[in-house]
Image 1 (cartoon, one colour):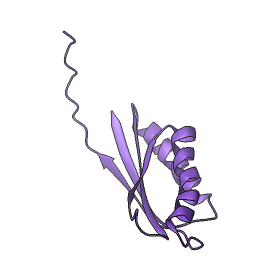
Image 2 (cartoon, one colour):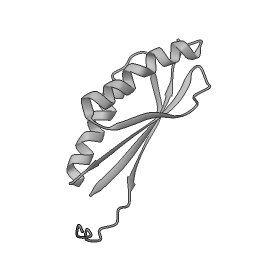
Image 3 (cartoon, rainbow, N blue to C red):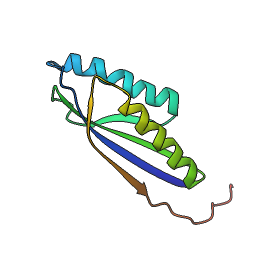
Image 4 (cartoon, rainbow, N blue to C red):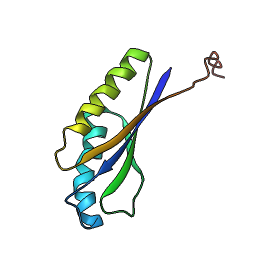
Length: 104
């Protein structure tokens, strides 16, 4: 099993309220979940009007598939002209490769 997370630090230059920020952010999060079948959520800066950190996680049976999914996720986030990506960090999660326990 392979698992990875990418965190995006985002800036919303035209947002002046939390309501405006959420109106821009919601299509990003919904699109990530619907189109790419990943877990996505705002993970920091929830109370700031022009900033957000979002985390996106995926799990797959092969390293190649995880890389392909996260590459597509990155292209998707960068495609929104209403926001600026200030930084992004990709992290791999260590998994235990112990054999599965038999069902009882």
